[in-house]
Image (cartoon, rainbow, N blue to C red; front, side, top):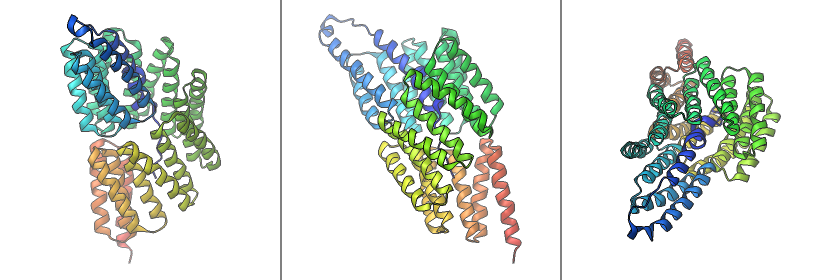
Length: 424
């Protein structure tokens, strides 16, 4: 029901294109003004710098709770030695972690603190980075106009500073918003601009990421040969530069194409490769995503016990790493298996758990999908008023988001429900 693609631009771009370079700049700009403090501060600064590299590694491996603990330690040190610039950067990092954990209000809280400090110390680059990350939070919340507003501000700053790499990263993120809005020509336009920039600056890892994202658009357009063409280009680059994490991402997405084509053995082949890499690099979040997708293949094959086995493994990982949005998605998928088995009370149980999480994290698109699915269960139970109630809630959310495809789906469901009610 819900295949989880791995989108390089959304979570990882702020790390690869923007977040990591800004951290490096902040380390180099720290100054000591007091001779009394100078004897002890360098050691503390060195400790913070060491922890910083540790946190970046943890972020790249999807070990978000560990990264959060490390960044909190860094924050305490930065405040202790009076390093305002470093404090701002660390707050940005904490906001990024909370975004990855799906704790969006918390992410915005830290991002806003970071933004105030970056402005206070005159760190324009930090301002741009944080605006970009705030845009990403709103993108995840399905508040796309708000996301675009922040991304455009970030883009303007990158252009003003001549930061071509940052410009490419934000163009990638704007492309992601338009893809979510299903404005695919617009998405491709921004991704192609991003691709031109990463090629210009010789950013091979960024080039691979952007090619992956273009492939995702062609998946949405159901132009699967075109999607595979871009994925294969991305895969070649990831292998060339030794980016194992992104190699796993693209292998996962290639598996998704074969899943959509109904070529399930081929899909499993790529998913298993992706899973092996996620385990190798310690990417627990990526491991959970791929386990979910393997479960989806077995669901499509009608092998429901096998599907549940993989979904439950995915669910355990999402809970372990605190990835609430993915937890909600997998709960919804488990509900869909029970629908296929005709076990409607069990399906409702999982759908309601998923719905609670979608509401908690502010995932409006996920909320709309799950409300629609609950409506379908009540239709199967011939509880037509209840079904209509949930369909109407789903329709309202999809209209709010401008989700034309989702609107059509729910309207079709309502029409089918009305027809069913006419039957004796």
